[in-house]
Image (tube, rainbow, N blue to C red):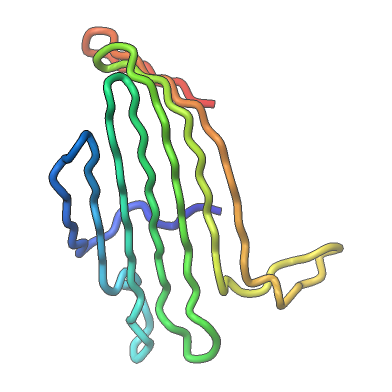
Amino acid sequence: MAVGVARVSNVMQYTSPRMGGVDAVISYSPGTQESSQAGANADGKLWGVTVAGTWGQGSAAIDWVKNQANSPAVGSQAATTGTKVRGGWVYQPGASINLLWVRSKVDNGGAAPGQGGVVDATASSLRQDGWMINWEHLFGNIRALAQW
């Protein structure tokens, strides 16, 4: 299960000025669901907020995104929400170690298989968490990356 937001057309963004080492980006995209049947609703939308800061050799950021699908003819509008929190240490230019936590959540996603393969019609909300350690280092013009 992923956040479901990789690349989106028609995005409007506001980037704040950097104050005290912190800046923010607010993103909005109307109608992110471009491939829909004729006569179907096209009211999907995407919202995103990023707040990032750098203080000396430390850095931190939080990203939040909500991707709402088009409204169905019957039922509730599905939505995928993603949250990512990052903290890092830059030990030299082009080199850092970061710890990340991510959460993906799907609401009104539909029925899901339950225990024994029986479909559970009430399982319309799913959530997945993950942790990651990222290391990157610049050797001349070659960037090495390692992730776990």
